[in-house]
Amino acid sequence: MLKMDFRLFVLLLIIPLFIAIMPVSHADDGCGVVTGKVIGRDNVPIANAIVEIQNNLSEVFSSTVSAADGSFTIDKIPIYGFDGRNNFRLVATYNSSGKSYKDKTEFFWIYKNQIITHDVQIYYYPPSNYGWLTGKVVNVNDYKEYVSSTVYLSNGMYDFVSSEPGDNWQFYLPAGDYQVWAEHNENGRTYSTGKTSVHVRSDDTFTAVLSISLAGNGSTYHAAPAEGVNIVHGYVKQKNGVPLYGAVVELCRVDGIAFCPVMSTTTNAEGNYEFKRVTISSPMENFAVRVTYNFMGNDTTTVSNAFSVYYHNMMNVSHDYSVPVTVDFIDSGSIEVISDPAGANIWLDGAYTGRTTPFNITGVRAGEHSCSLQMDGYLPENVTVTVHSDGTSRITKILKPSTGDVYFKVNPSDASIYLNGELVGTGSTNLTRIQYGVYSYTVSRDGYRNVTASIEVIPGGHLEVPVELVAIPGLSLTYIGYLINSMLTYIANIFG
Image (cartoon, rainbow, N blue to C red; front, side):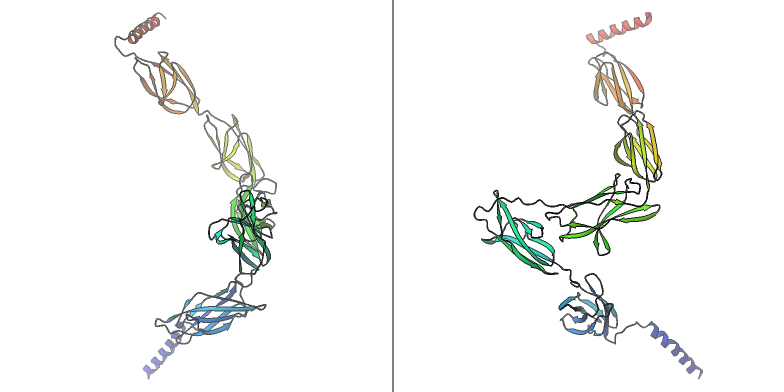
């Protein structure tokens, strides 16, 4: 009896535990479950969409309708694969305003007794209200011959095509009606196609073939427009009007209330920034400039007003956009730099400022900075300076020469002097503004032994180097003259 009670106790203990550790599944034995959401092109959930589950033979096994939040669940999907899985795909259909939008997923695996999560996106809903207009320009007498042309659109846009086969023109446009034509310039004349009326539908592509006749003399020459370039530039200044240096500037596409960065740069010492070749695919898009700066340990963001940028190849509109931005704080001061002599190059934090002394550098971020003054012929001066917000720090330096003078006192007077292998003079020579360092020199003359040695030039120093060459012994006139000269010098020293 005791054993029976114990077994019953064990069973009562194990059964709940077994149930607890079993996989949670809405699937019956031998079936799978898929759950997910139906979303549109902008990832917004779509309610009341019909969702079907299909096998790889496009057979529909089951269907359901998405809920208000776009969610759906399809269960009891039969799994008959020998490895406990089968390939399926989801197909979603949504009807709106008399039009049906349909899309499908790639095939994916569904497993026996498991729940798989998989979303399905209807890419063309909601409609973008934009479509593509594309085509080619060919010779009216031979459609296989492509003709290099400028293609014009009635809204002012234009594009270029070459004569390479397969080179098509294209425009991304709001749905609507347009006229398109092409012009080809040759031998100072212009050949044109007629204007073709086209209708661009949302999320669709209209293809037009423009045929051009190259027969005859064409018409009066019409120069093609240049390739357009959009430039967005401006400056960022602080509350006190001083340029803000080192701020991160982003060019953002404005999509509703969202800001999507497309280009980024940093302001220079004058607070300027520039974005070159800003490209868009449609006739016009809205942008804003966003400035981010770390002020007192926190990132602060300032956003400009939105502005419109036009397609780069569009006539009768500006392609130069100036967008100044003012931040609501002061986080910089200035450094007044003076040197004697003037004209030293100013380096700040390892970067050349492009300025020379004397100069007042404005817009320098508050905090410690390294400043270096560099000038040919003088030793560099390196200084650490602290800049305070809305204040001026001063650096005044007397530059020390980095050169010295060397005077070679040479006998005989026509001996040649070489410094580091380069001829620098004949006879006694005074060399000025020699960069400091160690040099080798050689003094030579025919009939005399060379003298070779080294010297060290000290910044600001004056070094005298006496050199007396010794004639090579022999019966030459040079040696005899050397002996006579030495004797006369010796006698002069005795009686001098």
